[in-house]
Structures are given as C-alpha cells and as structure tokens.
Length: 88
Image (cartoon, rainbow, N blue to C red; front, side):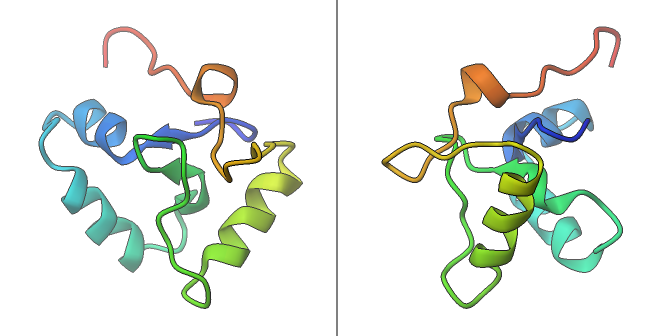
C-alpha cells in the first residue's frame, strides 16, 4: 500500500486470502520490520499499540506521511483508507 494510506488488519488478511486471519497479520508484522507495519490500524482507525510499546513511533511515522489523527486519536478511514486493487 502506498505512503499516506492505511489498511486494517482484517483488510490485509482478506487480501491474503483469509479474512478471518487478522491476528495472524499481527503476528507476521511483529516479526517483519521490513514491511510497512505502521500503515496497519485497527478496524476503527485506531493504533492498537500501547504507549511505550511502539505507539508513539507508529503515530510519528503516519504523521510524517501526512496522515492526520482526529480528536478521538483515530484515522478517518474514508479519507486515508487503502482500497485493494481488483483481482487480488
């Protein structure tokens, strides 16, 4: 997915062929720092990491890409959400 866009764990699982494997996406992202892990958020547009466990870094990386957080600390998925290309 391109910079400035986010997807949910469930979207990535569905794109990989198993829409019920959102937890597996979390597992993979924790072990592969070469992936754009910071662009994956929860279904509500929020950052799931806790303070001190990478939350600040994820938010900073997203903001550096121009993604804005609302007053509720969530990302507007209708504005910044990634749409998977057809045929995947």
